[in-house]
Length: 253
Image 1 (cartoon, rainbow, N blue to C red):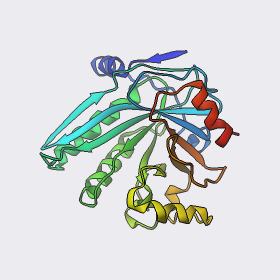
Image 2: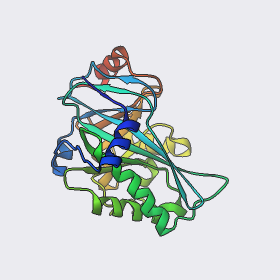
Image 3: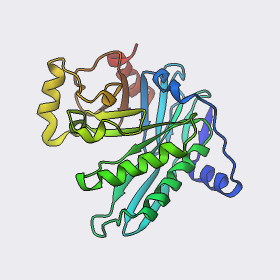
């Protein structure tokens, strides 16, 4: 059983300039287990999962962009996973509503540098960006993803969460330099009826980058999902064996 304290790991890695990445071929992202549990900012003990069938995408750091600054808060809560668990480190980005970011080249490079440190966490085979970018922020976001992909080794995959509306024909997503764009099928807001009706009719997302995976939440009814598709699962409460087993009865193998 591995126990991760991300803040301590990043501090040591930065001080010693040591990368401790378990090697994985980025092309193996498609072979990632079909079920991926999101582990958010709270103590999580996932000792009950089978690493051959379940991966874990954990919130590794929360980053706020304000003025020309990049304010980083690393994960402070322990995460326990069985040995051999495939890990994806998630960086959650937000912008300060009172002091708008400059979106400068300097800010972009500082942001990329902080996210790139996540590859130093032992066992991490991928980095995922969670950012609900507004239309005015898309060029900045594209530049960030391009910088990350150019600097990440082939052993590390790069994925992103995506608003479901982005996956219904929004051209800005088509050629983003990521391995996967995961449409979020919960907290849909005004797009809810359009998205769910489309899925109910058996129609797929029009953007091919969005057809590998979906994101769902335990506190909302699950929409119709192709059983061959990877499912990222969010739990608004701490994971337990019971909540995990109840989900697996619905969407497990």
